[in-house]
Image (cartoon, rainbow, N blue to C red; front, side):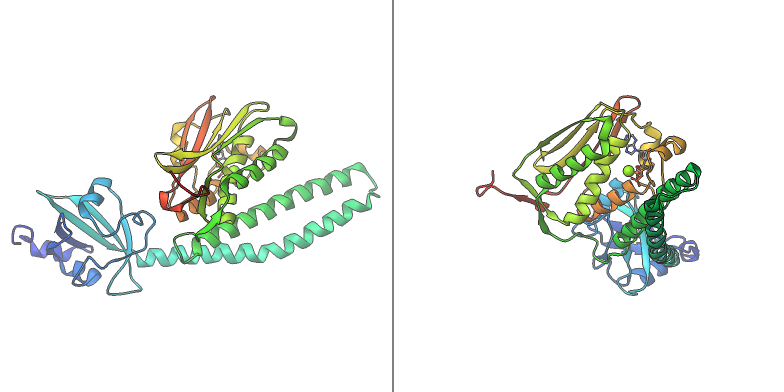
Length: 344
Ligand SMILES: Nc1ncnc2c1ncn2[C@@H]1O[C@H](COP(=O)(O)OP(=O)(O)OP(=O)(O)O)[C@@H](O)[C@H]1O
Ligand SMILES: [Mg+2]
């Protein structure tokens, strides 16, 4: 133990919890703050994070390799939120650095509440304004053509604001849902995709994209139909919006390495590699001026990311500028629900 704690003064002066653990996660050395944060045992951490739900318990070797931060509640102070980083340190030992991120979490919660409240408050006045605008347009006794044009534009912008408010509300509902995992209702994905395809044809309209759908009719999912509809339609409608008229879009639902996967391949404008990691940020758009024309709000993929995480899936994007993009996601096997009576 002495070799780790030679400069006791230094480790105690740090404002972070530090400890050294072996491959089994047993503590070899630690400073006082680490014990304050974690108590006597680190193995009973209440892990409530997105990145860790596949890990049955804290595994330092695995974590150090993946270079991932765990977010967990302190097992001894329920109101305390911690971030835990694990780094290789010595032979088969690991350095664990623990930060108290409770103030950050509180600010984040305040931001979420603020956005949720304001979106909620904006909903009713917008519905009223939109209603009056529709009524005014019906009268049709405008004194001049200019008035009609103004009303049409007001209606378009109000509709856009309504869209934005609804997306913000969906996002805050997903973020504030206490359960990190989506429910496990049986969802008929082939039928869902067929419905979305019809909506995509309507969205494409005169642009007449060639939309192909290839689905394995036997594969269903255990999840939330509403959430999956929102995630899948976001990806598919993007393919329409960012692909030139007449080009092909392919939607595939099949088993890949035993996991049910969705692939949406377009032959559109593509996305430069530097933008790909940021696509799921709220309001992120590759080209503000160009994307404005698509009438979107930049929240679609943020919603998609949340929904997929709640279904233990992750959004993957590959793209080539000017050639097209593929958006895909694979779900864990235990969310698969087969229709066949004797599954292969
Ligand atoms: N298939 C695609 N091809 C090219 N660019 C894409 C594609 N899908 C998304 N993007 C880019 O990613 C950005 C973010 O997409 P996202 O769906 O989040 O927002 P949006 O489509 O602009 O608006 P909305 O909130 O209405 O969906 C888009 O603005 C666009 O620049
Ligand atoms: Mg979109």
